[in-house]
Image (tube, rainbow over all chains, first blue to last red; front, side, top):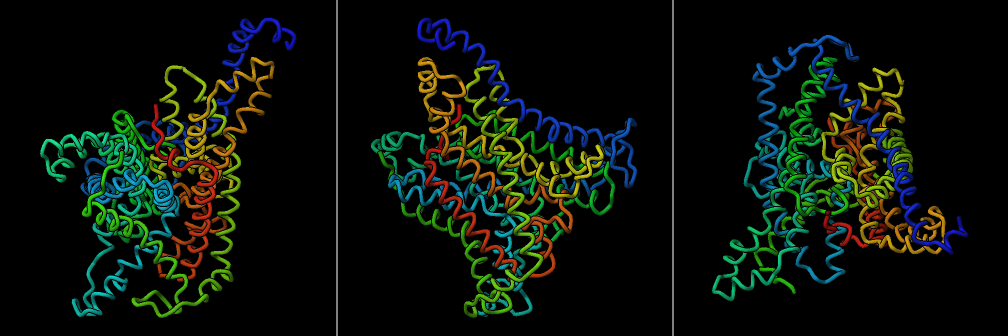
Amino acid sequence: MTEAATTQAPPRLGRLGLQQSHFKWLLVVPLIIFFVIFFVIPVGLIFATSFNPPAIGQVSVTAEFTLENYLRFFSRSNYLMAAGRSVLLGVVVAAVTLVVAYPMAFVIANTEHPGRNTALLILVLAAMQLDMVIRLYGMMVILGDNGLINQMLMGLGLIGPEDPVQLMYNFLGVVLGLVQFSLPFMILTLMGVIRGIDPSLEEAARSLGASRRRAFFRVTLPMSMPGILSGSLLVFALSISSYIVPALMGGFRVGVLPIHIFQQVAEGARFQFGATIAAILFLLSAGAVAIYLKVGTRRSGGLT
Amino acid sequence: MERRISLPMLILAIAGFAYMLFPIFVVVLAGLTAGEFLTFPPEGLSLRWIAAFLQSEKYLSAFFFSFRLALMTMVVATVLGTAAALFLSRTRMVGRNAMRAFFLSPVVLPGVVIGYSLFAFFIATNMGISRTIWGLWIGHILYSTPYVIGTVGAALAAYDVSLEEAARSLGASPWRAFRKVTLPNIGQGIQAGSIFAFIVSFGQFEVSLFLSAPNSEPLPIAMYNSLRYKFDPSAAAAGIFAITLVTASVLLTNRLVNIRRLLERQQD
């Protein structure tokens, strides 16, 4: 082999290229096997379970087929409302997160100073990587009935001591928590798109007489649309999937799909109906992710 | 060319950063408060809750359980993810983008559903690991590997494959060319990826929910279980250690790879 290398380089390269193309599959086969066994098959099992007749305490899949669980889901207002609440929550959170994240992404994208830019990115990344339960602990200390905001309002005499403002254990609290959770994802998605917009376009608009505000709303913002769309879809998918935020910030009073899954499975041992809700949530989320992949021409890099 | 940042935009951005970071700051304060719980204004600082955490069987064992789980996860996720990223960077096959999306999907799909699926799968197959560290390990590998693929993929995108080809044409074996040329070039990307894998496993909640049991409880689950009933400042003290760990890893990552490039890489 080494002899051939010094004398006949070109044909050898071709041959090795072919060998390499077989060899390189070995790199990905372990992960494919892992994903098939521990991701595709288990999720497939859940879908199969959702078509089994309900049997309390029975986990395994059987050959019996029924649509009973799905009929139950779509005929009970309780579950339909939960689905609707999940979707509404996803939409509201995506909209609020967008409004909060856009200026942040804009400032990061336009901070040219490398050190300052890196420092801002480190903050975003650290917030994103930090355990959500810890961040929610902070949120609860701030927003609770005896929380910092209510203590401050009482201290100022704006509200009575027995009359705290309900900032959590309701829909509002869940939204506030999910925005906190989603911000880094939205920022990272928007940032790349905003940086890709040529500033000379905005300048051209200004030199033609547009005010700064008008140039922003007519040029920069519309050109951020791909990022806005994919960021919102990503945040929607993340929000409807979250269990921990509705559990802690909603205090189980905001019944969304992930909460119902846990209740059916862990508390009721109703595995088939739990699987049905899981399948519906999975499809909703996967649908949003699929559209996200379709529209995402430019996306945040390594992490999503 | 630089766009000037207008004042209203700057104010909104600062408010946004405050919203993002203030709860974290509050956890640090709550863990260092001298009182029974955090009040406004704070009652003063003390280390009593840090001491309580260090003596609490529940949080300390959960902290080390999470640490061990994250290390185990990191090893496998780094190997599987790096290999897959190498494949994805070298193949031109149809559907490689779909394959990439498939490998990244556990991050964005509902963790509760993935956790429940694994739980049911372990029981149905009689594997006996449904509520042990091994079951959690598998769930966490699924969730952490995408971060390795993304980070190593970014390092590979910045790497010129022709360097390896040059080594090959000079007679190096494929393995030698990879080890001597490619690996040193992407090594820091791999290290950064493994740090990410560690840290997302350490903070993972949703996938763990169905897979943990009272004697195999990662820190987020332990904190959640106590938070449902009361505000325990020693949980916040545990949070301080986790915050330190995450901050240190992100700073370390920043030394290893260019964070700006990692986060802004345009995908093909």
